[in-house]
Amino acid sequence: MLEVGDEAPDFELASDTGEDVRLSDSKGRKVILYFYPKDDTPGCTTEACELRDRMPAIEEKEAVILGVSPDGVKSHQKFKAKYQLPFTLLVDTDHKVAVAYGAWGEKKLYGRRYEGILRKTFLIDERGRIERVFEKVKAKGHGDQVLGALSD
Image (cartoon, rainbow, N blue to C red; front, side, top):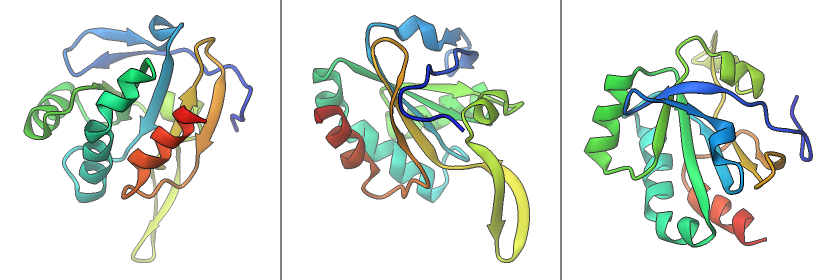
């Protein structure tokens, strides 16, 4: 389990543009790395739109947002276009990055147990260290939580 002060595991994933993105490409800037279950679903849309609406303030803090889900490039492109999301969405179809960050695990829905993305966000500092971990994120209000953490 990753904790505050740990070095954030580097990774390389395809982005919504089809280009590969590495976490280490953002060294020198704060990174909001958020894991979400599925494009264009109610909770995920709420969370993404809250982050979108706070982008001007997030950019003032010289931070970038990277969203990670198991969806593919085309799904990310549609989601991004539909809601005018101004940040990068990354493809983690094999869940390797989610597993590395402890954002993949058992979930329950209507009494059924299954493996899936755990809604989780990491604030990573300019040196690549974890500054804050948001566990069991509630989509509504998360944009303000993240912005508040950047201001601390």
